[in-house]
Image (cartoon, rainbow, N blue to C red; front, side, top):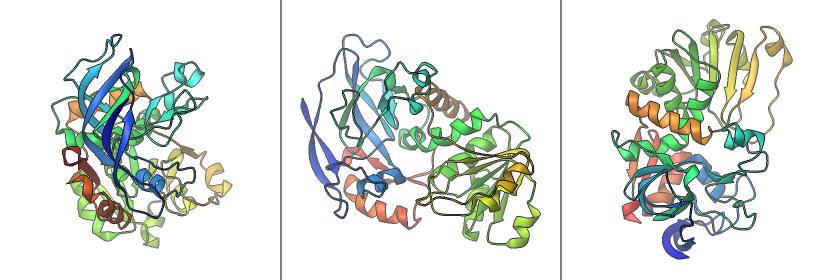
Amino acid sequence: MTQVKSYAAHQADKPLAPFQIDRREPGAGDVEIEILYCGVCHSDIHTARNEWGGTQYPVVPGHEIVGKVTRVGNEVSKFKIGDTVGVGCFVDSCGHCDSCKDHQEQYCENGHTQTYNSLSQDKKTITYGGYSSHIVVTQDFVLSVSDKLPLEKVAPLLCAGITTYSPLKYWGVKAGDKVAVVGLGGLGHMAVKLAASMGAEVTMLSRSPKKAKDAKELGAHHFALTTEKETMEGLANTFNFIIDTVSAEHDYNEYLKLLRTNGVMVLLGIPPTPSDVQAVHLVMGRRSLVGSLVGGIKETQEMLDYCAEHNITSDVEMIRMDQINEAYERTLNGDVHYRFVVDMKSL
């Protein structure tokens, strides 16, 4: 074991603070990574504060990781010391279920291992995430990162990027499709960029008029206020796809009415309470209400390569590690455009 520096939450109602954690020595198939940048996801906050339940303290969040390879096991063939690499939302899976065989490890039927606050495949060891100086990951869950793009802006692609890229690819969004994005935050701003890059006509749907300027700058062709009844009525039967990134409670029915026949509304956020969906909005128009998680490792690599080719990155604000608690509060207040990224040299 090697002791490394990290920041951890020790209780739901206490701020994150410095903490020493043990990292395993690299095994035959492992890659050790010095973490350069780690994005701050809203999931980090939910977990640190036990808002989803099941947090095992101390917890070291962070699953948007970019760094450099510092050591490799003697059976590692995919990476070498000095390579620029990334680690996303999970670091292992069973490898033999149907989902894993189909390169969809995110849906592992025996339980994939998330990057933090998760059981390793030994079903005993709890994982620690990217708010740390180093991490050790099996080579099959490490991703190649192009040096063409600013690495701090690449880090959020490992969660926000793949979470929005995966449904756009799966449901075949193409040039000419009309796509609406609900919510302009960490996920929403990536959905706008990616859908626009695929040739879609993108409309941002938001409750906040001050988001209009940003939406256009990110690539949205239109902006509509969801608080305006006439505007929403005028958008009925408009969109082929709606990407809903909102995790707060809201009425799905108001958005389902905006779909064309055979339209698809994809949920990326998970509100805290059950939602009342009226069947009539699905039946009348053969509309679909679906959900999507992040992508598998193969698709995540595809996304990273796509973003490097099309010069797509996240809009970020850099912070030091000792600013993480302030960053959490600002995230909750919507005061970030659109992802905080920790410069891990500050740890």
